[in-house]
Amino acid sequence: MPKEKKVTTKKVGKKKKTVLKKKILNKKDNKQETKIEEGPVLTKKEKEEKKIDKKRKKATADWSLLRGMRDLLPEDQKYWRKCFETAQNVSDYFLYKKIETPVVEETKLFIRTVGKGTDIVDKEMYTFEDKDGKKVTLRPEGTASAARAFIGHGMWNKPQPVKLWYYSPMFRHDRPQAGRYRQFWQYSCECFGADDPSVDAENVLMAYNFFKDLNLPVQIRINSIGDPEERERYKQELITYLRTKRSYLCEDCKKRINRSPLRVLDCKQEECQPVIEGAPQIIDWLQEPSKNRFMTVLEYLDELGIPYTLDTKLVRGLDYYNGMVFEIYYKDQENETAQSALGGGGRYDLLIESMGGNHTPAVGFSIGVDRVVNLMKTHFKENNCDLPDQKVDIYLAHLGKDARRVALRLLEEIRGSGIKIGYNFFKEALKNQLEAANKLEVPYVLIIGQKELQDGTIIIRDMESGVQEIIDQKKIESHLKKKLKK
Image: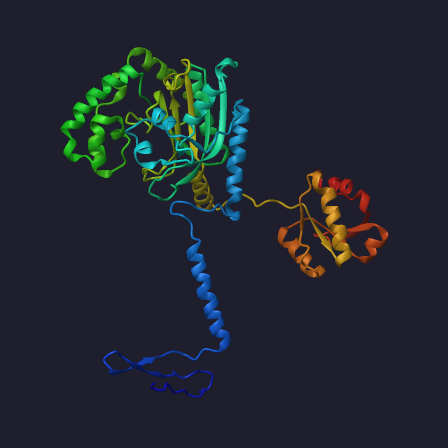
């Protein structure tokens, strides 16, 4: 075997010279080839660190997220918490009751309600067979599940209307884009059993108030798509028009012409926009009762001072809608794409009946919380403001292991008082703990040392003035409430 020759160099100053390492390699044809590898000489420690780094990178790659999914990180939770609290407050004020439905439902529920020919059913649903051989789907939207619960639990026997709300994750295998994820969250309200324009206006008002309470300026786009008979007559007119413009449409819209022509009006492809602009308007095909009802809804919105725009091309993307429909848009935006709608809703009077229940008028809306959170961060940044982080009232400092034990007991005793306490039992030095308290901007720090352990007392330090007072540990909660005005 040929020997390996190794040529090294000495250090010159602080730099290392290049080392040439020659290997004589035998090939099958007995010819020899010289391979030269260049690089700095690594110490044993550097080699180990390089090996660990390589292993870490491999582990990171092995546990990456699925496409279209994401983690909701701690630094974003203040926005998610604010959205949930706002949704809860709005729903409670308008007397809606919370409901949670299963994430997994029978596939036929969504085929029956959402409708064949829609992108959701044809392209986006997560559908599979469970171990019983039943075809099931991760819910792509919540109205079908709420309607199923309304029928299944006999809610038609309850005083009408039945008002429900939920704040839940949905799933669609869609192409991920800004604000669009394959697992996304929706805040939704459904009102079953009320057939009056005031309830339509109430739903628009609730959706508008959700954004108003978040200090986000929005505008409502609204339209009426009439009753089934009016819509059917309009469909025939629309199909006739679209057939003459077929060559100008995208491939998806060409397929929709006969199967679901209204979906063409909802298309956001640039090539389809001129055709959509020239399409007949559904509002021209409404009879007097439908027109009068829609005008009544608009009068309510005028009375409420809600800004809205009449959009005669608005149809929404689901088959069960009839009558009034609306969508919500960020008021300051210039480019309104398929992802720019923050939410929407409308009336669906025939849904319960189509599922085998009694005739039950209904109206509802849904808001995409993921898009709202993204908008909040952008809007607050542009306007130099933000949501405050969770406020801490006091900081609990300790000196020594015995003091730490008592501090933990005091932490538990004060827990139900409504006082938020900052602490770090892993810091030992009082200086470090006071620095942590300063960063949290607390007005007071509680200090427990060896003397306080013996006396059963605790020091309260005013962080602004530096003045300290000694209080009996048993009276600390009431004393703090007076100071903090809790």
